[in-house]
Length: 498
Picture (tube, rainbow, N blue to C red):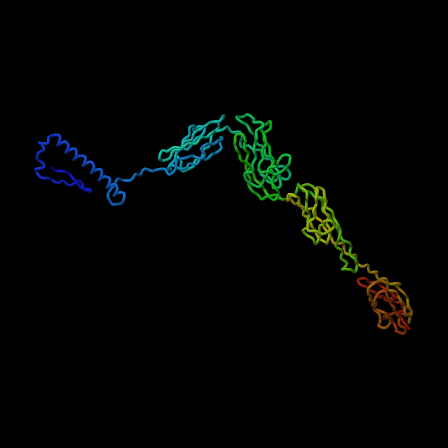
């Protein structure tokens, strides 16, 4: 009899003796069939064993060649769309985010008229902009990945109840003058929005006003308290009105307010400019509004070169109106004037009420405008206070030179006098041409005024001038000078003496 043996990875066949092979006819068909059956079962078992061992060796890295790996991509996490549900409004963009699945996404809308969606997506987000609707409309959004897995989101497109037409009105005078669509810092503005559905005014509809961005607050009706959020119901015209305020000193910036229809959730945003403004002109006023001039006293002759005086210690009161009390007042030039508080010199004087006053005290000559600031930080300068130096003292009145008498007559050997009145000094000189020694000034020819001038016709001096006839009279002229004043003195004498 012969049989088959299977080794690991091979098959061998061994022959038995011929006596075992004989007699197959003697056992008959039954015996032969049993032998065949046993041989077949052994073959099948060996094949199964070999296949199992080969697979084991391949997994262990034995180097045996196995089947190629499965390259079909698999998703790491389930495909999903966020948000899974959303309320959308016409013309208001909304963004959806895809997570999980295998990149290479596409999106589809069940109603592309109301909610168009880009089919092939470049990334993991997509934005939709709904079209107009007259009633709430449900739309299914389906997203597929590269493995054809799908996920969905449900959107409800609601009719618009608020449009982008917001009325923004700054209040004069504090908020105006800073440009179009702008509010000055330190001012208030009114904001009005209108709610309507398909052209029908929505009355008593709650509208929420929010500070979305910027340094401003809404003013609470009644209390006037500042608030970042305010809910106002619409009136019979479908309008909701709110007041906003920007504090003084807020720097220039772009601010954004948001209005939301509380019922539908539709939100709209409005941008406006805040412009820093600290100028109080047109808001604050100070009286007196015209310049104030204070003049010092006139100088004194002989003192300080006759210069006039600078005023000192004179009080001046200023009254403040407008803006927001309390106020402060200060002097930028304390050498000219200072401010007082209860009679004491202070750096800043406080004024508690509208119409109140502060007192300035003059310190010296010069000009100064005081700085007034209200509670919101707005400032204004007062009218100019000018302190002038007094007039220079009048020039000293110098008595005029007076020669009295201004003439006289002498005989030979006689002397005569004339009085000199005035101030300062004088000098006297004979101006007539005469023979020397015939007529002389005997005292004094110069000196301080007042004084007395003495002259003499010298006896036996001969002719006073040549030639002269006997018995002739001659007039001798003498000039008396004091400063710029010259006064003449004339003396009539005989021409000849003996």
